[in-house]
Image 1 (cartoon, rainbow, N blue to C red):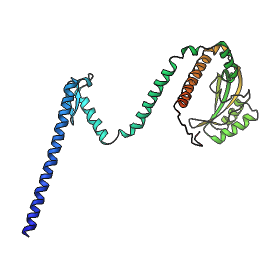
Image 2 (image 1 turned 180 degrees about the vertical axis):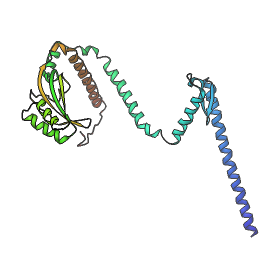
Image 3 (image 1 turned 90 degrees about the vertical axis):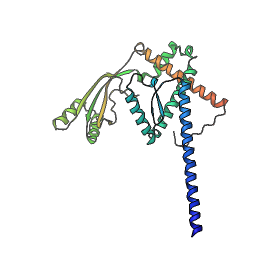
Image 4 (image 1 turned 135 degrees about the horizontal axis):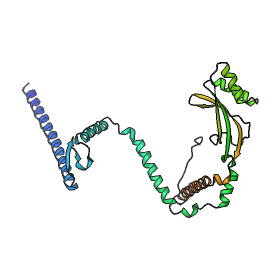
Length: 266
């Protein structure tokens, strides 16, 4: 029994000694960190106006704002970190960083190519001829409804040659809600009617929880002089894109970069 009590006393003393050592280590660590912070503050030459959990707030950080506001912001920031909220921004920050790096490299690639951006008259005319559908104005009429099945019915009647005004009038008289839209000389739906002529009817298009069917009523070409600057901008953009593509291909060859495209991902 006496031996058992002696053993317990020894264990108890050992535990106290260990705790004492750990506490001392923590205190030394804290003191070291405080010294480091103070040293950093002293060498930086910036004036510390407050600390939050040991984190210094410098006078230069205030930018005219009340100190209490900056302290509250730091408290909230530290709480956000404690909750791990910074993790959800890591991907966004990485994407932003990636874009900045790529954009900067593109600027370096393109800065010496300004002479190549001179667009000749032949290039302008060639682009205009190849993209006549892009440079036309169209007169369109559309019928809009909130009922998809009704929109399909409207499309069928338009394809059969009925006029949009008559169709809209018929449905309105029967109490069905339809809206007749008139698009006068616009290029808004050029891509939709690419390669199509007067009388063409679109598929049913969903727009903001409504459905619309559009008919091409008339069209006219825009003279080349009216779209010259647009063509020049598009040709320059195309040259810039090609320059970046060529540079990437050059890097692939010079650095033996292996690119693997996973089947079905295109």
